[in-house]
Length: 318
Figure 1 (cartoon, rainbow, N blue to C red):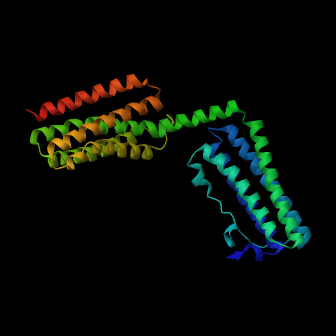
Figure 2 (cartoon, rainbow, N blue to C red):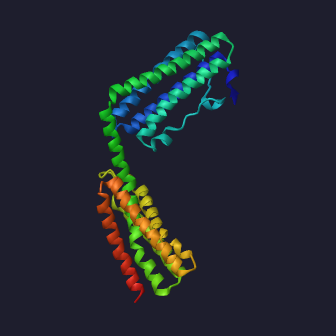
Figure 3 (cartoon, rainbow, N blue to C red):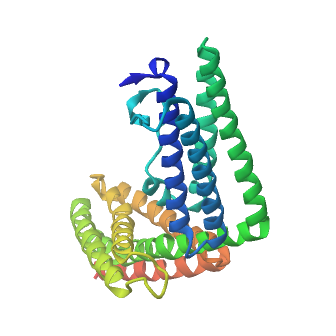
């Protein structure tokens, strides 16, 4: 790996050309990813990609004038300490806001690197070149801000953020909540029936684990096979099934783990506390993401959970 201070001016230009090309492709990838659901933000990244192409052409013209047509191959990973870029797909999966933040950071990182590099060199021509590159990155960040203000005013950005939130609710919160509700409520009856029938915490634990894992597998497959997500916008069925299955299992295991406590009365008391916490959490999620009044959500969940719990106790006491 080369040291930055060892690069010639020709290699510095080559590095800048490669960096501008990579940044432009990242912006183009962001635009492609967002075009269908967030056209205004996609337009911003399209224009930023065009800006990078303009910088790249200017750098190529400068290299041709000073050093000839051959441009040496110098990439980010070839130079120690040069700012590395995350692959576009790693940022895309984090959502639209992450892409916006990453784009701003890309410009700041590049400008800061060029400016610090210019301070470390005593060669006048190299200092001038690095300063010009830093100024170009600063200008690009300012242009990106102007583009954003023009193409994405507050009202449109708010609309896109609302759309992103709705997709998050559909694709993550909803299957997770369905699983958590099923795991927390449906396993109450077998766990507490086993507990009251045997008064042996270990038996209740085994029944709870079996019920939780079985329910998780069943709910995961049911969610994955219920909808391919193409028309409903609910996202990839495998991801939804995985989320639903894991949350179902987690919901059942929560009030099962206390039965690892050897003393029956103590295990039962802890399990009851965990049940109340689980039901309260479900009520909060419904209020936070599904616009259900908190009191109404709590009453519904506590009433349903109480009925299932009572059924388990009644059956186990027979």
